[in-house]
Length: 343
Ligand code: NAI
Image (cartoon, rainbow, N blue to C red):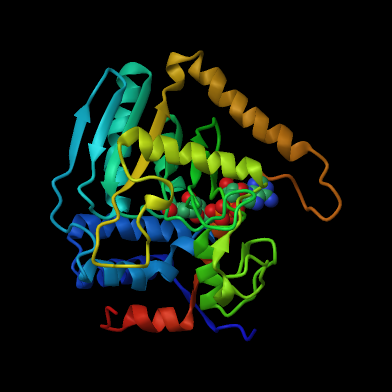
């Protein structure tokens, strides 16, 4: 497959291009700011599945009113450590950020904060929200629904989404540890990224219409769960926390991302925030997480590896590299970003 040309764009400029396109499509300012932040968070860490590659989709959905552009967001505290956040089908990046601030508030005052978000749009690279809490000294876990595009282990029809899980922990010195994964071998956005760059994919990621493994991203009909029945079990756990627990559509009833861009998605997300001060000596905890990272770094790398990384470390290194080189964007996406076109 012939690879698409790349343009390297400075972070601030790319964020501005994101913000301008979102605003031009009709997204109110505060929501456009947060969505641009999330997209840059992804692209600058090399999580290209959730950066510029999604812009045309978001812009079209905004323009077609597939998001509520004038939402009535509402947090309801339902217990000392629990609450629900009604997202009113606004853009998910903004809703999940605001809901995480509520969960952090609960954890600060009561040790734990659990907030279930009901009815929102797609929220992007969800590691952002776990890191948001870790930057305030909290340990956090967040999970969300995604549209059905994964065959359950042993099945032939898609049922669950790529239902991601993100976990972050602060530590004494350095950036938080950030583990952020789709419960599939790869996120759907990685297929989109491969399509945009005209790159083939490994044959372990996805299957075609016949259920056969494929290396052509344009032939992908469904994704595979990570580690077979284990990934399948995790995606079910996510759907129970972020869907059924909150009274939302679940499994194959979750709306499709791409089918009708004028319809609301009605997605759910679940934030769990833990205040380390309530579970032991906070200073000792932060030191021990740092010690853990140091000890992992000291482990002799296996053949073919240059070192042992902590989760999120590779993305931190990419971020440093892109700060020098600029962030790579496929040429046709860059042309779209600098144009007046919406869709
Ligand atoms: P990935 O497979 O690139 O990385 C998963 C995790 O493994 C990361 O925490 C990464 O730091 C860690 N990792 C990777 N290589 C490592 C190594 N050599 N040593 C140590 N740790 C390593 O991520 P994936 O699964 O492709 O997900 C990409 C993004 O897609 C995530 O940000 C996720 O939140 C997002 N996503 C969002 C969805 C949504 O509906 N909002 C749906 C699915 C995924």
